[in-house]
Amino acid sequence: MLMSELPPTAAATVGRNSAIMLGASIPISVALDNVLIAMIALCWLLDRDWRTKIQSARDNPVAAAALLLFGALCIGALYPTGNSATLLKYIDLLLIPAFMHFFRDEQTRRRALILFCCAACASVVVSYMAHWNLLANGRWLPGTLENPSGFKNSITHNLIVALASYLFALFALKEKRTGRRVLYIALSLLAAHNVIFMVYGRTGYLVVAVLFTYLALAHFGRRGFIYISLIMVATFTTAYWTSNTFHHRIDSALNETSTWSSNAAASTSVSLRLEWYAHTINVIRENPLAGTGTGSFPAAYAKEVEGRGMMATVNPHNEYLLLTVQTGVIGLACLLFLFFRQWRSAVLLETPQDRHLARGLVLTFVIGCLFNSLLIDHTEGLLFAWLSGLVFVTIPTDKRSAAVTT
Image (cartoon, rainbow, N blue to C red; front, side, top):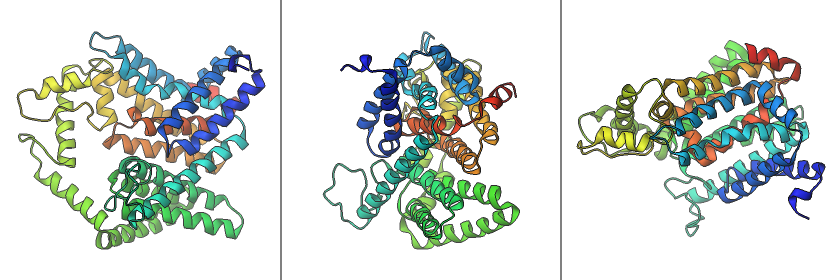
């Protein structure tokens, strides 16, 4: 039987199961991601109740803000210098209403989060195996003995595992049974250790610190903030003196920052980012209000550094700067408005775990977008849309109108 001939209940079941399976797929397989996304989009389209779908997207403050941002990017793609191919990199924003459609059931959301955590655990296991040199011939994996990431590159791996560590901490706070609580605490600590002591991604270091500082402050108050501050200082001091990976990454960042000059071509990770940031700001000054068009960054940046002997990049590794070049301060305002809507909407969620997860998601991407263009990266952009749909669908219907008008 063709998918188009399936009854609505069957299509809904396939869509829900595909949304659940994405939890396991996002940390591991891009190919499987694409198959599941296609299934979700098709099943969502097969639901003929368009009035309900449109009303749900319009009334949900997070979905509406995501669509507003995508709309700004669509307008940018119409510029003479625009590129519709780049617009497709932001297509995950359109999936947020579809994810919300299939995550309306609590059991579905719980299963999806469990699968995500299982996949993150698999990434940690693979990382430890690479660290112990048990995957010397695993050429299909990106990790190495020196930088033992799991199924993804080090930046993506650390972002996923840092978020999983935070999730396990949330599970531990909610769990009443001692045995399971101890297990969740152990998994949280193991994931945090993997991020801080083993893998190169410096963004992950900062994400772990911010997420757990927020959680301690939000859940335990001022005393929790004091305790977590002491723990963080002790942890990062220990990592600096005992982990060659952490020590090297911190020292290299400090050295590259101190020796960087805007007048000389950069050649190292941090200095290249500083160079990209500086010249991207110059590009923004030329068209600050509406930008130069979605997909115009490579040409605009190449023109800026032409004749200076500097590397022309297609990505400034900063989502805020990239979006501002393409859509101006209007597009940047749309992105900040999306984050603002997510943060404000978190208070409308029914359980502390949902509220902390929602704000943990916002903090992760607010920080991550400072050092990477996360929304155009496949895994990170999809993770943002998937978790946004999973978490913010739980905003009570009777509170959505108030949130939209706030």
